[in-house]
Length: 145
Image (tube, rainbow, N blue to C red; front, side):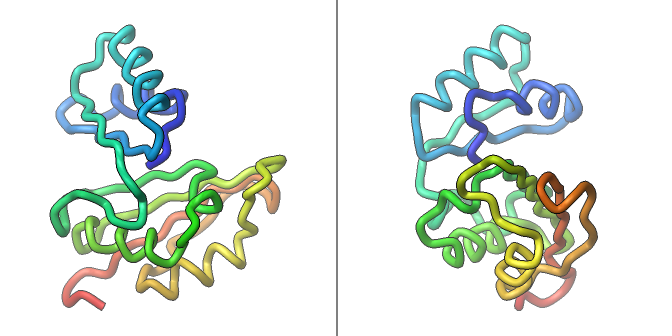
């Protein structure tokens, strides 16, 4: 979600050669830039969807993993975005957030954990430092929360 110009997308698409990477962004211009990078790299296992992060246009339990780099702080309704992510992840699915300074919308780990756990995700761990970290959360298996 929020792939920007596709900086991470090429490597991610390469790592899932038998899978599918779906890029989702509010800005069609960013999706177009990402598409150019991925097509130049010869990667065809990628889809491009434009839309609002608070109402993801995908079926329930459709994704195994969601990855957001410096995105959540830019979403006007963070709770609705997290609820939408929860809905589209399969039980046992993982959502990963990377946050770093000097991003003006930086979310400190305690604030991120509070928001994400309030939506039903379980914290699995974090790596890095306070100003540059990656945090992983999982949607519980079994009954939806």
